[in-house]
Image (tube, rainbow, N blue to C red; front, side, top):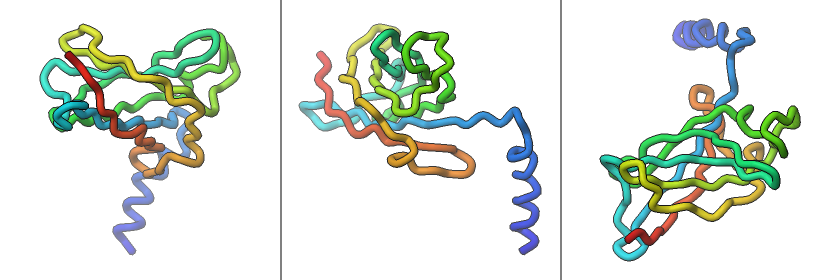
Length: 141
């Protein structure tokens, strides 16, 4: 019981702070379409975007590790419905990603529409909302 109380006391300031930002994670797994082997490692990066009818919101970027897995954390306040400076928050983002190798774009995904984080994301007290966008078999030449 004492361990639980200590853990609670450490976390309490985060719940009381106005500076705490809700963060979301997007996870993907990238495999080579022909060999089914992971794509990733040195020089590979991935960028995530929210596509709207009027603009595209950059959400974040990260590495694509040697196992073909990317896990990118972003602030959902970066998403807007419509224009970039819109005050209307995005509730169900339309997400696509771009994979780069040594800074050069090598793949752009199709857009996954209307992702409902409230229903489809898992939640972890330390990690926030996590959504696994899926495993993608891609063809790069």
